[in-house]
Length: 414
Picture 1 (tube, one colour):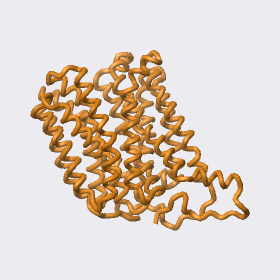
Picture 2 (spheres, helix red, strand yellow; picture 1 turned 60 degrees about the vertical axis):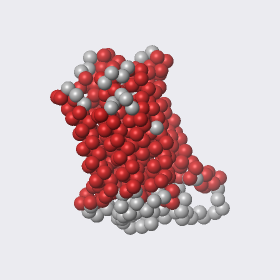
Picture 3 (spheres, helix red, strand yellow; picture 1 turned 90 degrees about the horizontal axis):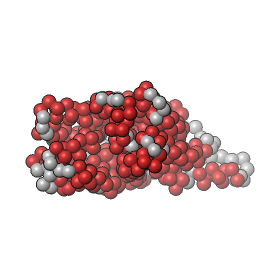
Picture 4 (spheres, helix red, strand yellow; picture 1 turned 90 degrees about the vertical axis):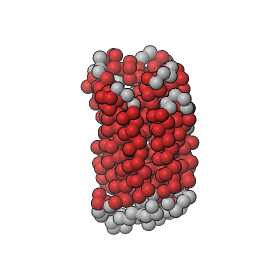
């Protein structure tokens, strides 16, 4: 059985001191919740902040469209590449220290990205992508450990916070560019949010350092046969497909609408609505997932919402664009929250959650990285949207198959 930081026995030789009382306050679930929320605000903000500024950054350095696109693709690839390392670090140094290390790395990556030279631009993207990968893998295990009875609800809370951070970054990037006199100041400003989250996380480090009894033998062991388990692959593929669909439509939805005759202002407003409806979906879908024996119905609802929105773009892109955008936004926010919730719900302990998260995100983000590039290549080859959108509908079918398997009432244990 997994332990929270609150239920591990602690032995003191004398009456509680001021230091021990302070440690207990810092270890309170409310303090952990605040820390988790502030950390999760940073888990997409630095990536989302680039898209509105991509034209200015590309013009400044003379980047081609392909090179400019790499600025958003590199972090996604790093999220997959670094996931196995994150799981090992969790077992070796503990999740509190991994989160602290990730936040410091995130600050370094954001700052590095705005230093002079294209090498710094791309190196910074690599570094911050690695930092986000550490957080992606670690957070499900922390939630499973510290909130075992409310793991699905807490997953909804932190995934909602992630989307809020991404939405704010996208909305504020251009105003911050005007305020700071350039794109570099705008992109660098997100290091302040990451630094603040690090300071807010320090109490969790203090709580982790207090005397604890030794962990039972084997609690940090790897899950045997994880990479051969059908459930683990179903979770990984479901996460990958929903991420592919989400990243692809984030990148291309405004372009699809404008090429079909919609003016840029209206297309931007439609895209904003799609982003906003992700927020309530990311909260309520995981919350509902935690109250059901299995999540197959939710999987069908999320995939169905996405498929309907994509099919709408295919047959009547501008006639009901607002409806398609809302359906796609619900599927993006709810689908991501559902994938994260199922990782927690299918895990028998915090250690299993971290390892299952690592595998799911290694596979999932490599799948996701193919989406925007492949979609663009199909559009360039065919000159239209029928084949690219048809590809997304095919991906919906794959996601539905994997999700129905992942939604079964099964638990993986070490």
